[in-house]
Length: 209
Image (cartoon, rainbow, N blue to C red; front, top):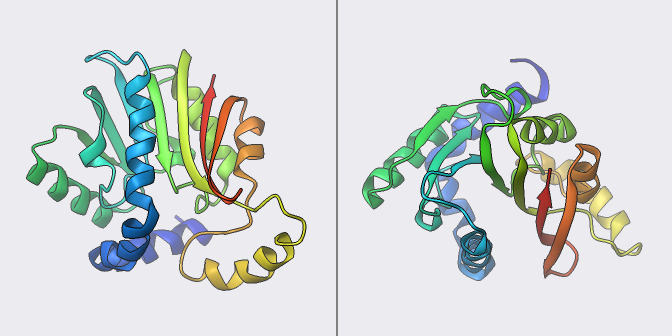
């Protein structure tokens, strides 16, 4: 793996051990309650016990406590993140399949998942539309895709600041000036709902194939 994806992989493997500590303030202030809201919405969807669900970018497994009662497959590009997620799942008694994989080249057949979801992932994927097209490919024709992301604000006054800060923030991981809602549409999805969580920066998006 070359280029930025290789750099990202090394970064996430390097910080896996302290990643939860680094994000603890954000989890405490907002992220945890947003995850509860996110998975509460998933719980309203008519998922069956045997539904097959894919999480992309599982990281250290922060979403694992909220997983729906379905068959879960979770992937991440970082093997060390996968190990942390596996440890968390085991402690919680959660059964799931954890796979080291790249969202830009998913190792699954077409149309196999009833639902796909990602939280704070497509701010970091090197080629986000490529990754989103892969999600579209592996999703069933009547399947749903849910995203919780941060992206470029809609305010024309705030956008220049986000563009200016992006190269600095990118050193540590995510990009802060992406138009992920537009990328989701470019991948072929139809956006059903956008729920603004904090201004227009943090949003929950529900889409369908």
